[in-house]
Structure formats: C-alpha cells, structure tokens
Length: 309
Image (cartoon, rainbow, N blue to C red):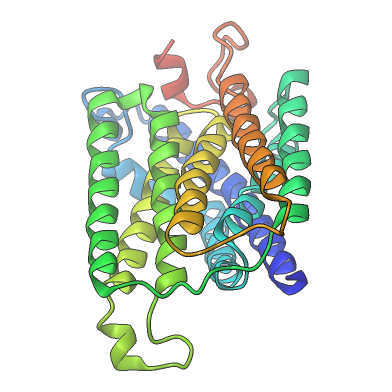
C-alpha cells in the first residue's frame, strides 16, 4: 500500500508539473500565431486548429512537459496495479494542487481565496480516501469487456474532438473533461491488461485493452493540450480530474472488486464525493474573470480567452 501511494504521489507530481509546462508552451505558441495575425490557427468556431496544436507541441516547454507526462503515466500505471482505482486515480488527480501552485509562479496567475479553499478541500478528501482504502481487486475480466473498453475509448476521443470543433473557444472545460475520461479509460486498461504478470507477449499484443490504452492516452493528451490552449489551466485540469476519477473509481468498485477497509466504506464514499466536489469548485472558480484583464497577453492569457468574452 505504501509503495503504491508513493508511486501515485510521484505520478501526480509529474502530471502537475507537465501540465503547467504544456500550458506555458501552448500559450507561447498562441501568442506567436496571434502576432502573425494568422487565420489558419483557429477553426471557424474559434478553437485551435490541428496545425496550431501541433505547433504548440513542438515548443521546448511543451516537450519537457510531455516527457514528465510520460514519466507520470508510467508511475500512474504502476499505481493502478498496486492500489484500488478510486484511490490511485484520486491521488494522481491531486496534480491539480501542483498545477495550481506552479501556475502562480510560471504563468503569473493569481488564485482567489475560493480557489485555494477548493484546493484545500481536495487535499482533505485525499486524506480520507487514503485512510479508508482497502485491498485492490483482481482485475481479471472477460476479453469481451476489453473490446468494449476499446470501443468506449474511440467514442470518447472522437466525441471530444467533435465537441471541440463545434464549440471552439467555449470548449475548454469540456475538452478537459473528455481528456480526463480518456485518461480514466487508460487507467482501467492498465488495470485489466493481460500478459503483464507473468509477462506473456502474445497475450499482451492480443489484448484489446492495450490498444484502448494507446487510443485513450494519445487522444487524452491531444484534448488536454486543446483545453490548455483555450482556457484556464486550473479549470481545464480540474475538469480533467473529474473525468479521470469518477468513472474509474465507480467501475473499480462495481466491476474490478476494489474495496475499502472494513467499516470505512462511508469514509471512502465521503472522501470520493468531497474530492470530486472540490475539483468541480476549482474548475468553476478557475474560469477567467471577464473583467480581470484588458490585454490578452497579461497573466499568460490566450487570445481565445479574450475572443470568448
């Protein structure tokens, strides 16, 4: 349990730092596009085009953030094998706190008292979850369920991409939510993946869950990048937290056999609900203030944020 918790905390640090660096790279790229007065950087609805997202992905800040994301992914995958999903996913989602603190230093964002209070609520909920967590389930599921997971991953990422195309500059929170659902599917895929213990390459390559991990991971990263381009880094990350925590946590209990300590079920439920509520509050209070800045370049703000006002 202790090794699993330490692994999840390290994954959280990697994800949180990576998110802020990716936001820094995304916003730098967006300012360059705005300086060129290029219409090719946005869709007709005001969202970032694939080309502008690709340009954001080749800034050094974004690439370093992506490396940290991959490190976080590896550690998070290990944590998902060692802990109940409702605990591992929620601890990893505490990268929201790291994102918020670093965004103050690196992006010049000021957090309100309500945001700090919401972050404190999330941290308190994590303590409750860690106290209540019991043994993780076996993770053994029928192969048909792995095909369903692959199909769900394709639908989630495809649906999220369509939403971003249709809503454009208004899609920041939804893009963050869909990316979180993708990362949640990734966590489930890692948990149920065949051929890992003991290692069996043919079984691993023949498991649809492996390809669900690829689709959900790559698609989730793309949608998270779009969310960072469009809106508040803390709001987008909080929406991601909700997506990657709620569904995996519920499925872990109902489908994979995760459980709490005897007599601590109510503490686990309370911690889970409070963590999600705190993340939603950060997303709500983290939305850009319409009257806060007159210049989109201030506080690392994106042109898309100003266009949405």
